[in-house]
Length: 308
Image 1 (cartoon, rainbow, N blue to C red):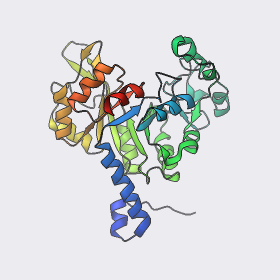
Image 2: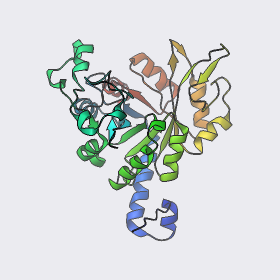
Image 3: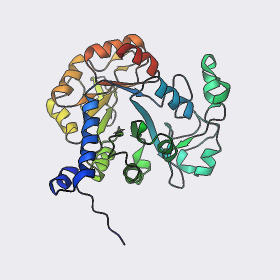
């Protein structure tokens, strides 16, 4: 049996493993440099215009100037990495039940487009009907390193093997070495697993703030940070130990949960800030004024119109 030995990039370079690794270092550094500029992140593709996570949504996002295509991952019953947001099929397909209970063949037979036409009659297109669910392999086969991917590990506790399967796929396709991928999650454990598997992949910690049940302020969904009103440099530094950025919600039930000070403090601790999911032009402009480093949006065309 052949045993693969993976060295950290800096160690490999120090040992003189020459030109290919130097090129990889350049590509990874270029990605980090590019992340210092504002990034338009197409949330599930251009999902305001076409069915989320389908070819039409991705193609439109590319035409609209997105810097990253966002992909959410679940796993099929037979271990395929599926690009779909929800744990279940009910909202965005004509199927039902958990994704993980269906084989790839069953999932590929579903209609993942007609729901959009029914829900958004003003944006309906006949061609959307019958759109298929996609696998990560299919998306990579089509786009390769011509695009950058912002991948979210969804519900990793349901799929303990997901992190390794994802990293192995990205490595095999050369997408880590080419600086083509960011991985995000609400699960700190998932991100730390990815970091242990390949420390070169840029990671972003997602957070969700909402009012605490006891009325004492705000709480973060998974407990990664305290209330933004009480967050400290140490809290941001704990995230910076494994991630390059933080992805917060901005508003809950019409009220702000973060402010410009949150963005400034994150920056002071070396973290990028990529809030989600921003579709209103005035809100986009407000966050640009706060100095955020990128935004998730269902409407990349609206955001590109502001940052051109």
